Amino acid sequence: MIEIIEGRPEDAAAIVEFTKKVGGETDNLTFGAEGLEVTPEQEAMFLKEMRENPRAVFLCAWKEDNLIGTGFLGGMSKRMKHRATLAISILKSEWGKGVGSAMLEKLIEFAESIGIEIINLEVRCDNSRAIQLYEKYGFRCLGTSPAFFKIGDKYIDFELMYLDLR
Image (cartoon, rainbow, N blue to C red; front, side, top):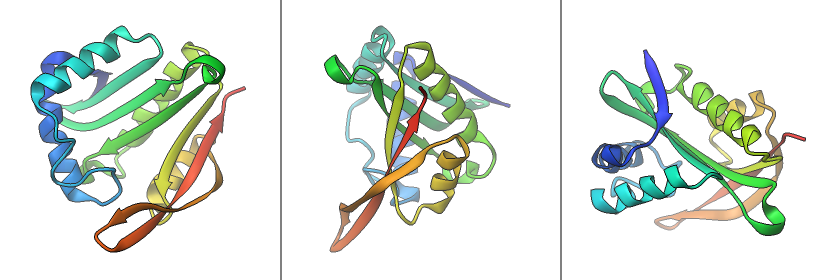
């Protein structure tokens, strides 16, 4: 059974290790096998701040005692307070098992609960699995951002996507 709950400061060490593992499995993320390069103490502070921020949430997907996915939704401020950004990462062994869908549902539900009207995200143009998942929940492509990533000497384009909740 998968349990998706808000990240807690005591989850920090597991999250730091998770980012290294998930980053080493795919080139779809902003980081590689080095992970986010933060200490467990820094991650614990981040998680504490997330829990105190009424316009953001950091979720962890647990399967038994193993962290298998994370999700983030962060509301913007001022004249963009109706908008949020979203990011999800799931271990490759869990792809196609509904974890991404469950995570996305919880993040959208949170967005609606705080009055977010538009959610933005970026996804590699060649990541058809993720694009299909996002489209299943109503996300639409706005266009392509060329050379969004550079891995070694290779440039990678990204799709800019949005979900209009109005």
